[in-house]
Length: 257
Picture 1 (cartoon, rainbow, N blue to C red):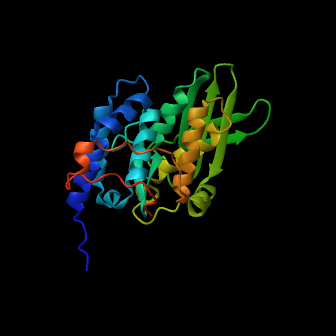
Picture 2 (cartoon, one colour; picture 1 turned 90 degrees about the vertical axis):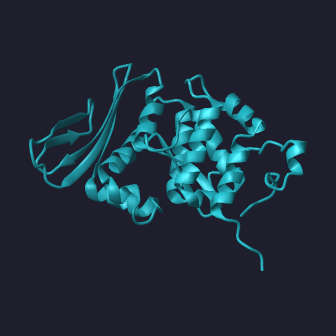
Picture 3 (cartoon, rainbow, N blue to C red; picture 1 turned 60 degrees about the horizontal axis):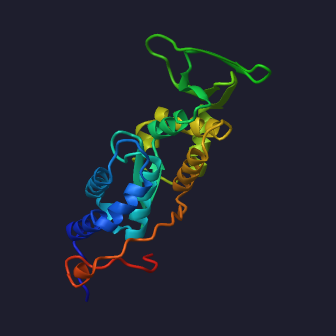
């Protein structure tokens, strides 16, 4: 009967691969000029694995793929809310945070303003499609009551406005249909932010944002559905001296499912 590998040993193995020079080279090539170094990205990612031990059960390929995707987008995963690494079985997947989506949209030179808000029953609120469209929201003072709507508005440098409005029940239907996260997910702990994120994603798909941002939103959609993101990353080759070291095994090359 084979013994299970302790979680700490798995985490240490992942840390060695993440800090290997071959992988750091790949991160350096992927990172934009945002001031984030490959070494910092690797350290942050290792911290996330230690913070979420279930990530240690994920395949090395999916972990490295998620790290590479974070590097390409210039978004650090973790408590800042830019991005999160979520374990789905043996797959580690990138999930954008609300702040991460804002960050990506703001990178477009054609965007002049972004706003996403939740409306409550005591707020003053009215909206209408048309030419031009109309949106009016005055938050109430004090106790605002239950959430009734959520919306996002994106302004362009050309003077146009793109917005989307959903009722609270429509947001919940979207959550129930598309989000595969269980109890204790951000939908349970921070409904307003998740509602704003949903509206912002829907509005951004019609806005003049970069193909990079559109692709990142597509990856986030797949993460919400629990569908494999299929990020193609070739693991770096292990140095010959390390291949004979039993404490630093070579990376798996096949399907680790």
